[in-house]
Length: 111
Length: 111
Image (cartoon, rainbow over all chains, first blue to last red; front, side, top):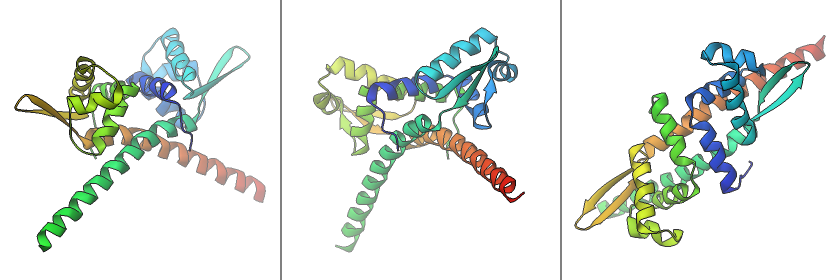
């Protein structure tokens, strides 16, 4: 599991905080796409898509590659997993706390 | 599982995009804390902590309650789960795609 430095994780969550960018990531889960293919269902200009893709690329959520005159994007799942892991690890802490509280309540019932 | 509207999810990821706020959430996983208790390990002014807590409260990651002169914060885990679920669901899409690709490659090997 990739463990990102705090500053990188800041950028990943920042990138995820825009529903248009999240839609692009969702599309890329189904496979690579050109900028035009990303733009079409979003009713977004090509230059707006380009800017969002740059944000996604800077934080490592997406890689792009130019073939001829077309730029293709693909998901970089390890970065997405790092964001998921941060939340999941915190949830695990929280769940353990609830478990301990439950045990304390059970013990109190037994008294 | 709580399914948040896109705009609310924008705010949750935005709130998570700051390492100071993530540290506060981490602390709150261990149980409720006052603003002062949140501020101490972070070397942050009380007014900076107050502002971060307001951001966390606005998006539903944290609830606060005033008891006497002290404001206590506690985690609202359902909101954190909604952010985790968004990523996990996308990862599931991605994993299914990789599985299908694997099957296609296996079938091609059999030919």
